[in-house]
Length: 507
Ligand SMILES: Cc1cc2nc3c(=O)[nH]c(=O)nc-3n(C[C@H](O)[C@H](O)[C@H](O)COP(=O)(O)OP(=O)(O)OC[C@H]3O[C@@H](n4cnc5c(N)ncnc54)[C@H](O)[C@@H]3O)c2cc1C
Image 1 (tube, rainbow, N blue to C red):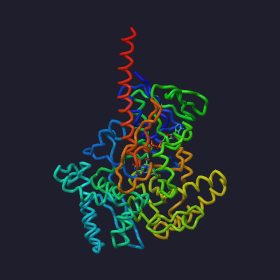
Image 2: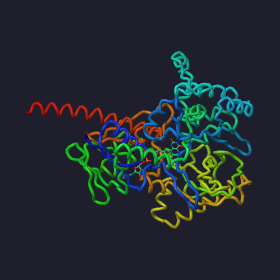
Image 3: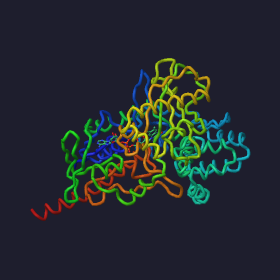
């Protein structure tokens, strides 16, 4: 059988690798670290586990279309418990709060009661969210209903209205400032299509966005085990430096230890900018170039810190968002971009995973999204002035801790900072150009669309990466892996037929 070499063992690389193995290929994955998973990872600090990724995973409802693939990939195994929080997040704006509950009706009723001035828009929005649940096959009391054909046709205009709006546009329709924050603050950027917010609510309230028990690291281990149990070879500590091309063919991959691997088909799962600029030493194709050069556009990156907490008696469950301008970031030399509706602190507690902390303790993580300009500044500061970078990181972390304690005084004296990380950390760890941890931003008026998994002019080089389907994220990383494996399978079948025909003619 033909051989496949995958560069990068993140979720999209593992997914492509597993689907290629299932199609009968011999597969090797080269990963620059000593573990696979990429952004889907976690690490230990002072006896606490810090989870880098999973806040929600769309597709965990057995009735959802994506569920089967999750099982095939080992994302979810028969005995994997799926945690469904009762509340995904609560926003707090100057003492007023609004929560997204797992129960869609409860959320709708609560919001109408709290913000009667927005009743009309709330009803309209939640009707549209129920329609989206129908598309996901997770509508109704048991979260197992799909829309009928008539319903789909009848309701296209209602959804088309939201299709044209971004998060900013949707937030503007509401009078209450709390409702505006409720809509915008969990989302990475206000430039994002509002359908992303609606799809997230639809999935969460349809029990289709749970968290597999054990968090990110265990999910990455399950996928790696699945790959290896199917006969795949995971090569750790292998950083690709160049993909060598000869006569429209990728002849092999050169690694930083000067070793060289060849294969019939090569798949790249690294940041698309890095693939073209560093591994291929070429210009980005026009379409991708235009997308990545939008200087003012947000990227998915963040400044984050983790706290150990010597109490399990917390004033909130799961995620709490302090919805106000984060002065620490805005005053600092890092900020330039005032494009956001607001700048929120997203705090997540991990009581749902008691194994993450010593008994009687908890771990809390705080995240503040960054723009592309901010992310770049962290990266440049780290490169040019490591001491200044460290100082800035610490200063921001202490200011953010103070803000959290001011908002939630019950936590005062209970929090200790155990780690701080920035876009520069993501650049170093997963090798993304701007410290980005998702793909391109999906604006209003666009639906997620695959931009093609082939590299023009190179017959046997493919891409399986979240960058080829905006906005990225785990479900997209999983789905592009399948798509790429299917494409290679079809091409290989044609190649084999041609080869057999030629052998016959020549014999
Ligand atoms: C803080 C945070 C929260 C998130 N929350 C969620 C969430 O709740 N739900 C969700 O769906 N998604 C979430 N995501 C996004 C999700 O983690 C990513 O979309 C997904 O992991 C991307 O997978 P990928 O394989 O495409 O890319 P990556 O994870 O970037 O994988 C690329 C891999 O390639 C390796 N690599 C890079 N360069 C080389 C090289 N030269 N040679 C060899 N190997 C190389 C890297 O080490 C890495 O393993 C979150 C991400 C972060 C950071």
